[in-house]
Length: 456
Image (tube, rainbow, N blue to C red; front, side):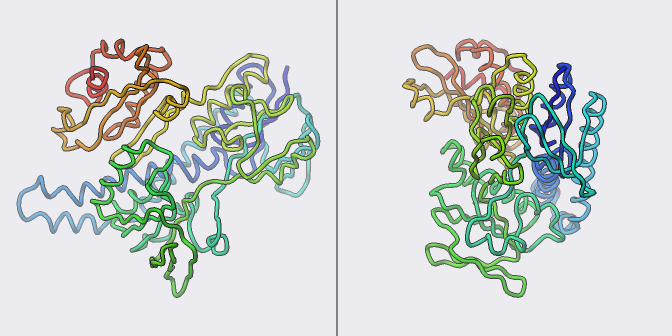
């Protein structure tokens, strides 16, 4: 029986522990904070709860166009009655329920959970500092490292990081501010801009790149930029913050172009960083940077019987990528060969409109020497989208122009984060666009636009 130690109980660690236990290993999981990691406790899950609540209130704010005359005052009163504490309580209840579920699954699988901070004594020995100050050594046949990442605060924000929010601490915001400046126009920045704007907060977004979502499809990013701008969010692109001051509860940012922005609160959404200093990786001869450690991208092997999954390996900072990596690492460590495929990971942005993609991007395909063909269907021609007044965006498929093989897809608009999995399945089945075209989609549905795109 393999004796395995998993360091970290987040979306990479606990699936790894469950997989290894399912393969017959004796598993000890060491977690220094809470099971579920950043994603469950202060990331993916709470943010989606808040986004859902915010979108409900945005509907309240805009519902008067479908009502009889004279109801605007009632709608305004209902919107004004939004309760931030109740909204927070809802997301905390969801988080608590899911955390308890993880603990139950680990216990049922026979995984021993140890609360403490782990470090390497050597390749097959892990030292754990327990909450009471004592230490214990865990001897093992292998280790899966899944310690995640933390918010990145570059200058000038590093000096005031205890006064501003990041994507973890913003969930504990005591009251909604009237004004908020978000530094970073990536996925996290755009989701929180949407969320706060929907709750009536005046939002500024500062992005140092020429456009928001610089790592996503440019056309999809343009659709979101236009939509959020129409709703009153102000974007400052190709600009960075060179200085920040706080006085009497007001933050003033000086931008690289000389302009200044003032707001009651600041959210730093500039990215994530990895700090592995406490693990003492030097004891096993492994070097690391703030981007993490380097692993075999298919097996997740770091060195010998040590594997690293999730944010610590820099392959893909997404919870579901970490979960799949954890399962693959556990399989390989238990002697059951498995491979991880980074290009098969779907990417989802939960704004309104939503953006989701999977497979190769155009740039990635062209870098491989592939002649790319685009198949695009706009939602303005989709029956259900027109009926529900959700016509923003498009669904696009990318194929190899020579073979017709499906390469990837970019979906921008309603239900994109759900429907992207239809493209994922098609990619896994190695379908051609012509084969996907033969699929019968129900009418009227947003999914029909995938069939329409395949027919283009």
